[in-house]
Every structure is written in structure tokens, then in C-alpha cells.
Figure 1 (cartoon, rainbow, N blue to C red):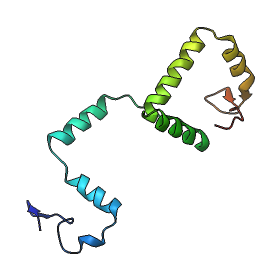
Figure 2 (figure 1 turned 30 degrees about the horizontal axis):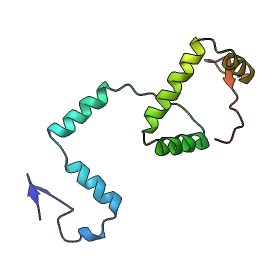
Figure 3 (figure 1 turned 90 degrees about the horizontal axis):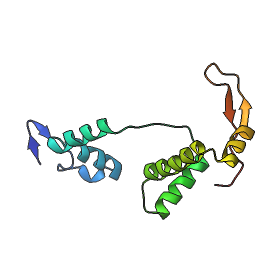
Length: 122
């Protein structure tokens, strides 16, 4: 059994064979420390993150496209949103018309409108 600073490694001791794969992964990752973990924490702090509510079927479609294109979901969504913003700024008239058509009044303190998502099968 592996002992370090009075800690016992649960993956090395007797009875560890009953642990499921998820538990093993969590326990193994908790042992990682030092410069590598610190570098990741610093990297995560520098990243800009945003969270958006997306319908489950849209999330599934994003994951499928990202997998087919061999890229991350985050990179795919950033690329798509970048293209959208470019079209919007360049006054792509179809886009503006569709956005106006999708507006629906909402009774909320922060927003005047919500957008009805298209009924497309993503």
C-alpha cells in the first residue's frame, strides 16, 4: 500500500477492486497536485467563460457537429457566434428580419423581448 504523509492511497490497498471506474478516476485525480495542477488552475483563471441556456436538442446537435468536425463544442459555438455577429454587424437583412419576426413580448424586469426559437430539427 502506498503511504505519503500519513495518507493512504485507496487505489493501492486491499479492497480497491470493488471501486467503480468513476470513483477510481476521482480518487486518482485528487492525488494530482503540484506545478501541473497549479498551471491548469492559472490557465482556467485566464479563460473567459460564458454560460447560456440552450435546449437539449440543440446541445445534442452541437455535440454531433463538433464530433464530426473533430473540434470542441466550445470552439464550434465560438466560431458560429462569431459568424453570426459578423452578419449582424454587416446588416445582413435576412438575419435582422428573422430576429424581428422571432421577437415575442415577455413580462420580465430585465428584458423586453424573448426570441422564439425556430422549429427546425437540429
